[in-house]
Length: 161
Ligand code: ZN
Image 1 (tube, helix red, strand yellow):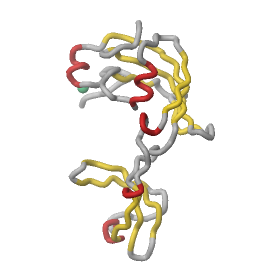
Image 2 (cartoon, rainbow, N blue to C red; image 1 turned 90 degrees about the horizontal axis):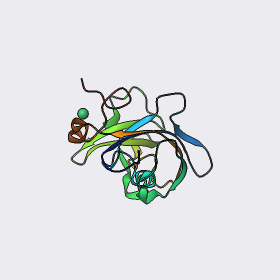
Image 3 (tube, rainbow, N blue to C red; image 1 turned 120 degrees about the horizontal axis):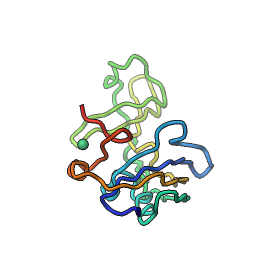
Image 4 (cartoon, rainbow, N blue to C red; image 1 turned 120 degrees about the vertical axis):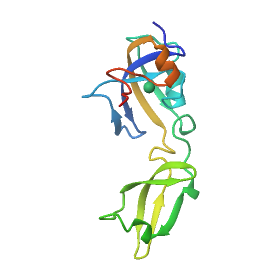
């Protein structure tokens, strides 16, 4: 079966950066199942998979604009250290969820000073060209319920409580 909109696609993948460092991989765990055509995965990978079939292996290089976007220096901000008074410890590299009118964002601590903390709310993969080695494991029709919810159900997908 070919990958087109409204199909549930299961893939094995390894994601590396431009230096060949592994960022993420499905190796050693369950493959990833997603609903094709619903922006459940990054646009550059979704469009590369269009028309492929189970058993296909492909290498996809995705530019930042088709992945997690370019880095925005305006998203690196200095904030009062008092905002982190509930944190048990505060170190460069730690990540926090920040809730604002724009929704939930993951922020990374990039500098800690006596009374201020510099945080970066760019996506950790923003600005990176991503390299995917992908094997299509399975392609099936989505159920009506999956289409209504816009995501995959079942053992390898989304679970409802
Ligand atoms: Zn659902």
